[in-house]
Amino acid sequence: MLNTLEWAYHHQVTDLTTVVLPPHDPMTRGQLRRMAELARDEGHTLRWEEAREGAVAPLRTVASLSGPLRRAHRIVVGDPFSRYVQALLTLTRADTVVVVDDGTATMEFVSQLARGEQLVRWHRGGTQPGLATRLFAPVSARARRQLTATADHRVEVFSSMPVTAPEAVTVTANDFSWTRSRFGPPRLTRGTDLVGTSLVETGVVRPDRYLEAVDALARRYGATRYFAHRRESTEKLHRVAEVTGLEVVRPDLPLELVARRGPIGRTILSFPSTVVHTLPLALTGTEVRVAVCDIDPAWLTQTASPRAQGFLAGVTGTARGVRKA
Image (cartoon, rainbow, N blue to C red; front, side, top):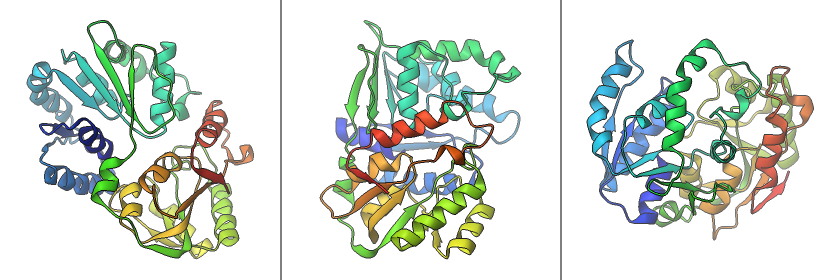
């Protein structure tokens, strides 16, 4: 939703209706509700659709949105890998589809789009498709056609990530100008903050190795706070606090806004993730330094996708305005 606000600010769009399909995760829901407040403050219309509450909820959601989707001339989506988004895309006749940043997933989306591949999240690339995936394949194929630019169908990717899209796709740079215009500059502390990641939760990194890496970074840089990713488990965060002594902070807004509002450390440490691309942009004009710690191949789980190491290395290697930790 943050990047939808950035897109609207960049293009001076004031009549945007945003439909939120919240997940069950309470942290993500909390952040979405706070972002919904900010969107309303900007004059946008919000629709909160509980699309995952019960067996009939998906059908009810699709039915309620089918009319607006068929009438819309332009559709803005935030997660093209989502089956909900793909299903809803098949209902629209819009002549313009915009994909706003979904973090590092945007890099993989654009690459798969350019290669004409099935849309699969990078950390699931090594698994065989299940029955549900095979049954959904026709819907996914129709959605991909909506995400493919033609002479009379425009596709825009609005991203802060380093992406190279197919020639017919318009790429617009997201420089977080809305964030910088609304918040900050932040007050800087003398300390160092560390940003958490959900690589353990997605089955990419072993929990024990992740904890060891966090502890080593905290000791080396004298970090005092750990900003949790919204998908990190409570059990894991308790272990982080217990082992490292770091103060665990669960942000109620995206980290770009939290950092811009401050207070924030003069050094921010992160593993390969979206924030190594977005924080330098959001914090332009400040003295904050962002440093990234690479993922050692020995940290990966046995079930991690074969693409994991290369993808994570690419996230780090293409980041601008950061240094290696």
